[in-house]
Amino acid sequence: MPVKVLNVAEKPSVAKEVSRILSNGAARSRRGRSQYNPIWEFCYTINGQQCDMVFTSVAGHLMELEFAAQYKRWRGCSPLDLYTAPVIKDVPPVRDCSYLQLPQCSKCAAKTCATCSACKPASCKDSRMH
Figure 1 (cartoon, rainbow, N blue to C red):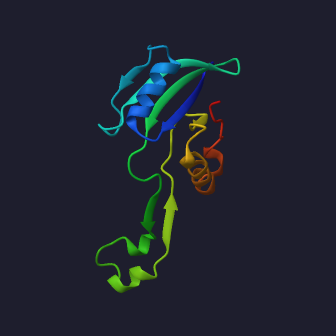
Figure 2: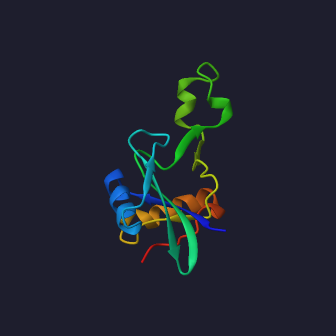
C-alpha cells in the first residue's frame, strides 16, 4: 500500500514546477481549500517505497493563534484583559498523511518542522528530499 506524503513548497509556482519535474509531467492538479494554492498529485518512489505524493504550497500563516475560551466572546471580558490573556498556538490538522515533506534547500523548512513538532510532536516526520 502506498504511503501518502504531503509536500509543502514556499509558493504555488514552486509546487507546480517541482511536481512537473518529479512526475515527468504526469502530475494532476485540483483545487484545494484556497483557490490560490492548487494541489498537485502524482505517484513517486522514495527509497524503494511507492508513495502517493500530494504537493501544495503555503500562503499566510502556518499556525493558528486563539485566545482561551473565556476570552473569545466579544462581551465576555474587558478589552484590557486581552493584553494579558493567554494565547493558544496550534497547527491545524493535516489529515491522512504519513509524512510532511519539505524542500531541503528551504530556509523555512527547519522552522516549519520545528513549529509542527512543538505543537503536535507526531505530526512531522522530517523526510527532506535529496
